[in-house]
Image (cartoon, rainbow over all chains, first blue to last red):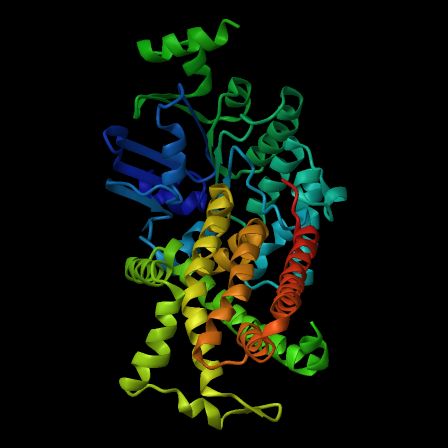
Length: 258
Length: 229
């Protein structure tokens, strides 16, 4: 079967959705991303791990252009990322993003946080958006908190709301930038459960995380980064049991011993 | 102080004009200053620079000089703003004097409003703007829906100081033919030299009341819009 046939038969799943090619990024003297080649297929869950400062967050943020790149191309669904303006805003609506520090709109209620995008960007009617938002909030287990403000919720609850807010835009791909790093240990699980659920429902996900357990259970592929470059890519099984590069062996040795 | 009490209607009219100058140029400054602040934090470099030049020009020159320019230099150049006298609002004609004074006060104060507003925008965590952009809001939408509503909360104390300064700066208009509080006080003391201290105290109390009302209103707004983080 040729590649073309595969595309028509599987109607989407398996096609490359996000493709980074020859991506370079500098922060002043620091070469933050070195010649990144990465292709994320539709429905795939890619976990990006690596030591601090390895560029994994930067990589994640370039995909919806919260960070600009110096060289290379990034395409979403076959189209180049727009440079700026309305086209860029439209692209970002297609890419869900979950931040380390949640970033819920502090002056809006939980429900308003989730409905803002659908109403203002998608032009959805208010009652329709609210109905959908309540469904999503129920799905992530914070439906009963809809009328509260973000500061009244725990970190884990806020992060689940942030996931619901991103899902409300019906994104093609979800980016998670260290979604559990700012959480207490007991709240990490409730957020990871939502993410595993999402992965099982076939959402395309790029997840920057230190949660090796999540990488093992939910990832299709693990990408290991160090010093701005992708050092190793493999299935989680292979990567954790049999890392090929010394850099990855060293990293895993440090984190898995405790 | 008898001079004040026996001419109390004149005293009230004088403060009425002071408050009128304050309200009109206050609203105009808030609007213009906010627009300038959006330019200054926005992505368009031309607007950015234009707003920076504006702020430098009007924040770094004395208010009195701006008054002199508008009242003395501009009429020579052919801009006397007499056209505003044809405008009638609620039965009153707008005087060209009043318009010029408001223009001078607005040009000056909006530069301060811009900087106070910008400090407020900077006080909103960057993540809020990023979250707004991430759900597909345009720059204008994320400004209007996410950043400015939160910036306003951070900006109330410094903005109050700017507005209080404006309320007192209206007294500069006294030197340009407007019978507001300070000009009226001078008139009273000229006519009643023996009551200077009493007259002075009466007008000082008037200013204190005006400013106190501004701070109380500001305090009320601050408590009402406080947002938890």
